[in-house]
Image (cartoon, rainbow, N blue to C red):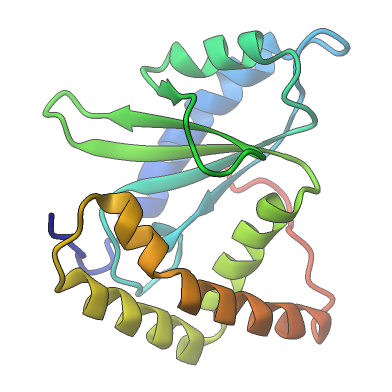
Length: 189
């Protein structure tokens, strides 16, 4: 399998905003204090959230909640929009859903994470470093382009192959964030 990277599309933030607004409404509707998880934030993450960065044309959304439990009301509020829950993912601190267009092309990866968890904050920190530091973005894109020339078993093995550059940039992002008093900021949607 080849990974198709495309140039940055200025439509990606608009698509995120539309998907995010739908999710916000349905999750807020089911969010009953003490009964269902409470929505904390919705952020555009991943490569499509970084202006100028080539990416697979799949919008990554991080939905941050105060808890996973009870999960069923949250799951139902997400699935009403056609998202499919994937119970098997490598990150035990996240719940993963995807949205596939009628043509069979995946259009959204939805990462549901608990507020304050490492992976929840790391996704935002990584995005913000790439947005703020052109050299970091260029290094990441260069690695992605090199890897995209290879054949992969599936998209997960491609993602795993990016691990070294991602961890290197996360270490740099940690230092970068300390010099700026970085915080995740409010919802994007």
